[in-house]
Length: 179
Image (cartoon, rainbow, N blue to C red; front, side, top):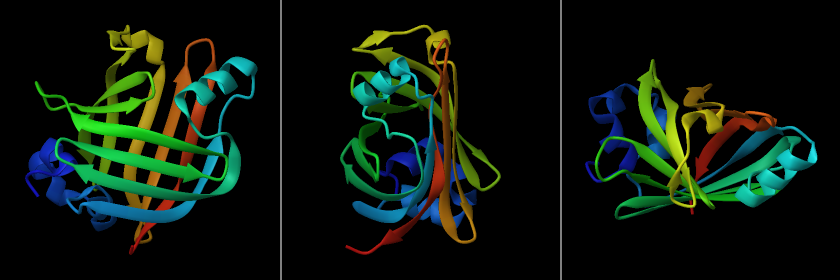
């Protein structure tokens, strides 16, 4: 487990997480999970264009969702297939610190992971656009949490940007499946 991304970033806090969270973020080479998500977001043109640029899902309730995670040396490739969009990102640990970096197209977000009770709280600490650092204020408010409920992995992500409002929020559940 020492080579897996999330256990390495969380250290001893890893063992206190709920079992469904450890299963999704653990050390298996591949995880495939299916579930459902409610996606919301502003419907004005700038928000729709930015979602399209970043390949974020479009709003829609009770969307079927399939998530594939492939773990490679040094990074994880995540593909999320929503009914209204496909989102791909690459996650890796910054070489000089304990932050998780997630690359979504031209944007890289920097998170500090913390355990809150038996969940992972992803705290945004900064980011880059096309490799150039952006002031923290450009990212507005981002809330991201991975937890468990009724034996399922649950997630709650909400992103508000200055001047745009809610770019995207998605919450729902996943259950790992074989193959």
